[in-house]
Structures are given as C-alpha cells and as structure tokens.
Length: 123
Image (tube, rainbow, N blue to C red; front, side, top):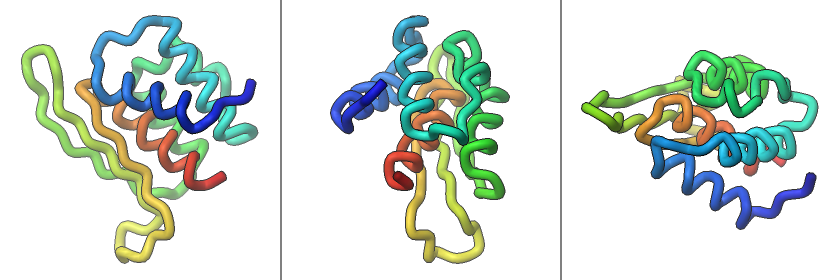
C-alpha cells in the first residue's frame, strides 16, 4: 500500500483532534505505520484493536525508534485529555536532527502521531 503525505496528514488530523476514531480509521493508521516503518513495525501491535492502548502505542514507538527519549505532558479532563508527546534521540542536547511530536485528547493517539511524524522525517 502506497500513501502520500496528504493522506498521512489527514490521518494525523484525525488522530490529533478526535477521541472517537472508528475501527476503519484506526486500521488506516495501522496501514500508515506499516508503510512508514516497514520492517520496524509489528503488524499485530498495529492492529486497530490495539492502537487505542497506550501500552501498545509505547511498544510501537520503542520498536520503531529504540533508545529514543519520550516526553509526555498532559492533563486528564472529564471526557478529553490534553496530551502532548515528544520523541527525541537525545534528551540532553538540543541538537536533534529530527523530532517527533504529537498531541491529542487520547494519550495513545498522541504517541502514535509522534511516531508517524518522526517516521515521515526519517524516510
């Protein structure tokens, strides 16, 4: 499956603005991860049923970018959280060539958005 930047951008918009993605939309996110990460992606972890899990999202990020640093900031509210995730290769210095960022009302979606952005820059 081939995806262009506009299609991936639409997926990122959904990930970062909505808290109620359908199974079909999450399946599209899984396909985007498979396309971008290739052999660094376990399709079982990226199944639509797993993408809503923060633990699975962290495993996806860890497998794709081992030893990278994660910074997660957020505030849980009634229905929506306000989560931000930043992935950096080096947390000590500000000299990273690429940084992955994501934000979403759902923590797992913020993590996945950061992975997708990082993977887009890393190809």
